[in-house]
Amino acid sequence: MQETWSADFLADVRLSLVKDVGPLTRASLLAAFGSAEGVFSAGRDQLQRVDGVGPLLARRIESAVTEIDVEREVKVAEQHNINLVRIDTDDYPAGLTEISDPPSILYVRGKPEPQDRLAVGIVGTRRASSYGKRVTEQLATGLAKAGVTVVSGLARGIDTIAHQSTLAAGGRTIAVIAGGLLEITPAENHRLADQVAEQGFLLSEAPPRRPPLPGSFPQRNRLISGLSLGVVITEADDRSGALITARLAGEQGRDVFAVPGPIDQRTSRGCHRLIQDGAKLVTCVDDILDELSSLIKPIDTAEGTELRHVAEIKLNDIERKVLDAIETSATQMDDIVENAGLPVHQVLATVSVLEMRRLVRRVSGTQVVRI
Image (tube, rainbow, N blue to C red; front, side, top):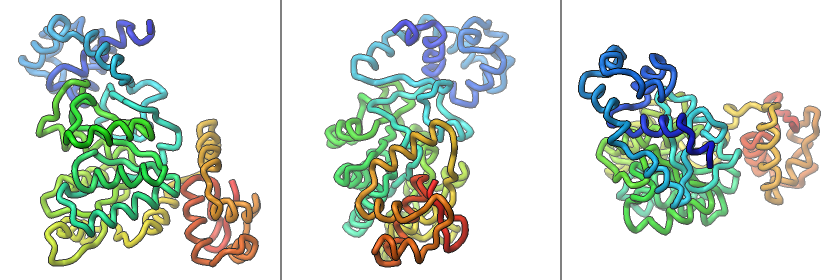
């Protein structure tokens, strides 16, 4: 508790609560003054010398020490089992450290796990059709069974189906919230939020009691894509917020996937535009797993060993048969098919899953090796 309530920690939280001090302005302030405590010790004139800090923002920062009750915010979070995670700690999601504007403080309810680094976002329209719901359920279920964590935004429609389907398949899911974690919207998803916290975690950069604001949804979307290796848009019209997530994913170097739909359906337009612009067309979960397997390279750190251990524990019977048929030296696909006693197409799909889970790697088009 003493570590949690250190002056340095409280200053970091206070700075994150100052209106209009976003990630980029915060970075400029820390570069100028060394720490959040240093920022609050600076005078108004010194603050205004920092890029992005004008007279109004300088006054807000100066008055934050007396006007922002940071201890109260921390207490509220603790009372509701919400953890505050600083960007410079091991608990901070690795994917978010790679984006250009990571939040300095995250509010987390639930328990992040090492395996959550293998994550894929699924987003789409709030007005999902029966087709969009069915496709989303299929893809989320397939990813969950492959050991991939599914990330979405807890909104109505596609987001809700993505979370529900992942939970039903026994997988892990992350819900990124636009407002505070005590301001869940829509109201009917309160129970779903509780289930996500039990089988994954909820995440927000807003303090617990802050309601979602219009501009906070695009901000939220960058965290969905930042947490993910790739983002799948299963159904979206040409003005959907899911297209913002797709654009941000591309800017962050993540893969963008889109599911085609009926050409006469409005909610297919966004996905078709993405495909025209170069998004990877998805017809089944293997299209996603095959693409992502090439992004994941074996690692020899202690964390990597832990990820592989978690992945191996969760193998189903078919995955176990295929893994057992692969040697620690280069193994031909034909030999794997024979030793596993499974159809060729099933072996190929399973090898892709094992690659994603960092248990095997390809050494050529026809050979793989167990890591």
